[in-house]
Length: 262
Image (tube, rainbow, N blue to C red; front, side, top):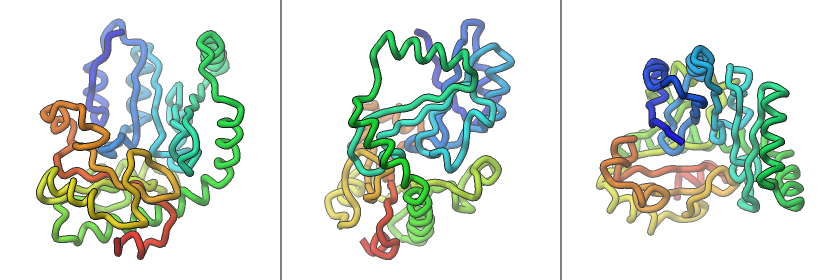
């Protein structure tokens, strides 16, 4: 399998990277952990013009934020481990197809490989999905309050959240995200690099939890440079925007005042 990494903020860059043998365009919006957005309609048009399928990983978005198939994508992917579950109980994923023909191909290969959820995992996922709307709206409200607070913090160099006016792709977020819902994820850059990030990880108080998951009812804090992306070469990590002081925040459903105070 041949592949190319492309900046999906630029549909023209995606078009330029397509080759005669390109079969799949794989996007993620908002992207983990940088929260960069993909214009799904524009990239879907690029893929369609070249006879390729467009699959979007919308795990951070959840169906509350956007419906990739309605925006032109052929396939929509979610890690159910995150917001569908919301309670750190299960590991799973789901892929949806735009056409019956694609769905039949997916079912065939799933049957061939046997990669299906265990019955109890499926049961827990279905049960927790019933509260996803309530949970995610509370998480998004907390994320906006935490992001707004961090923008004024003297030890924070930068805050990125799609619901902020300062967000680099605010116009696309407003146009593409349904009902002003911008999700529960944000990131900030603390002054002092990875040492400051480590210090924050060591001293951050409850209700924040230190771990690598996201989307749960508990608020989770992560320093990618020393945790989730520690195995990347520093130059590669910096190239995609993950700085030494980069802190990823997954807001839960706790009291916003408690999260800010901690």
